[in-house]
Image (cartoon, rainbow, N blue to C red; front, side, top):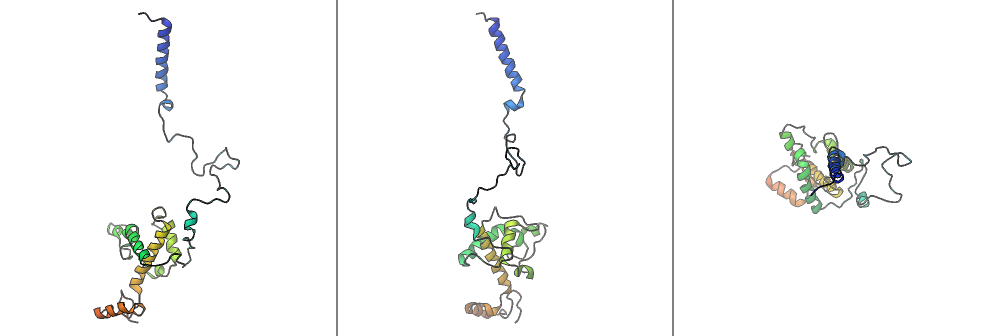
Length: 207
């Protein structure tokens, strides 16, 4: 069976076309990094104000923001927006051991595992500066980070941040509570053990 010259030429032309197309990487490879998009805060000629990021629509709020509004307090505020109970302290202890103890230690003294591996020691929660710092300061540090500490806003939701703060306050109190401020049952237990109950429990100081 003979093939006409026109058909043969068409086939050759098609093969050559495919060969040339294969040499064009843009036509044969889809790279997800090469696509039309705006980078954060990149300029734009499309919008009249020249910005690619668009302002929020009036009278709208981000999803979930209203739920957490009541848990956000100023940095210098000593308000605690949640009821403090045993369930909150238990949750705070659990979250603290997961996220905080590797650096701050189980007792909040700054002797976490990172220190044993030669990294910088964070300050103890039991120093006067942090004992006297307002609750809002701790919330701000967990949310935004401070110094060598990164922000934990992505890992710890607002309610759990307050649970951790409650537990940190309990740790601070454990080393600075006066015997006269303890419940009668606990004072009797301490007296029976022969431990000084007149001053800071951890130091055995007398009033």
